[in-house]
Image (cartoon, rainbow, N blue to C red; front, top):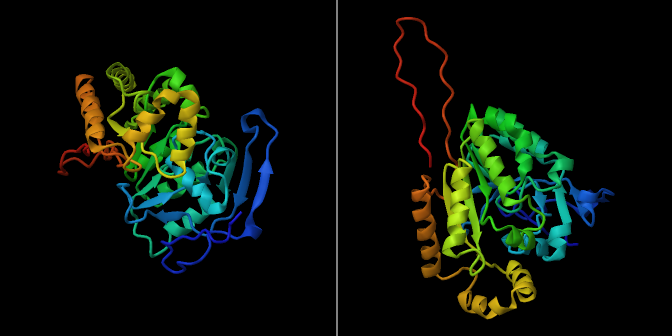
Length: 349
């Protein structure tokens, strides 16, 4: 594995320094059913706050990713290519060779305290899921959330994992001092499609239960309806069923995102498609002939349909990855005769 030459280009002081050295890697397997066939590579990272490349389409600048690789095993995952940087396989290896940055919480706390850090928004779960199965054993997120809370640093989380509810109190405490955005990813509600394309994830209805529980505790949660998979989850009746379920969960918003197939993910997805739906291979080759993204006309059609359904069911769109502000804590009572402005509710983005 090419551990040493994985570099962090955004490190302002050492742009050519490795994120970790080979001597810092400990490889483990666990003899439990939930981790059968999975190998964990524990490393001590040298940096944890990553700058998003300027050419990225992502609507945020900074991320924290405590894991690399993901046992969700989504056949379409765009992050598969990142495993090749470590000479790891982007197919089964991405699903079963998980890199764990075991020092992520203390390293984040140190970097947040740096005079160079300006307190910008940090996005999590944007590369691989920070609440994937490994988090149940390594428990990195409680320390990460506590550090962000203690520094009142704004952040957002995108997840398919139900384990986020374990950290409900930390999320609520964070929301009292800073902006917290939470999104759950649910691209479709078809159980048969879920079992084949997202075999390691909680079922869509369980993810929507997360949205419902967060709402019950005063934490607004949007749904990233991603991916909408051409010819498999994009029919009007399918879109309607998905948006209806999202609305019933109490989601604050729904944002559709059509499947994109970057190198690494494209090869793995197309191999799966050839096995499971060979009649669709030629259609995909035509639809994605110009690159990783479906044509603009197709994306606009899906987006328009979802937004129309969202309005019908009483929810609206939001921009993917953006934080949603929640209600400010009610100020403590002031002494009699002291004037103050009325409390306000911050807007939803």
